[in-house]
Amino acid sequence: EEYEDEVLIMCQVESEEAVKKIEEIAMVEGVDCIQMGPTDLSASMGFLNDLGNKRAKEMLQRAEKGVLGLKNGAFLAGFAMPHDPPSELQRRGYHMVSGALDIG
Image: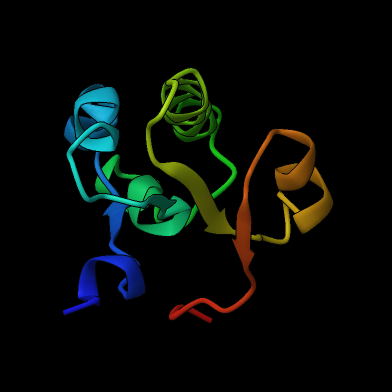
């Protein structure tokens, strides 16, 4: 009976296509959080071995601005990276930062 109040619904953004539709995704009713996937985003752009790639960083920043610029939209979450530490994500407006990755 209370699942809508108890469940956190997160959408992980890991492609250029998703970034281009970030505002639309973030405004879907019931979506609480947009989780940025910087490793998979970089990989989907052809930069798996260059996670700090300038184009990938620009795409990530585009997504961040899209989510943070919405009123009453989802909040922003992401993963700390060696080149993008938690303090930097916090400075840019992230609401939640994870520290574990599935790639080593």
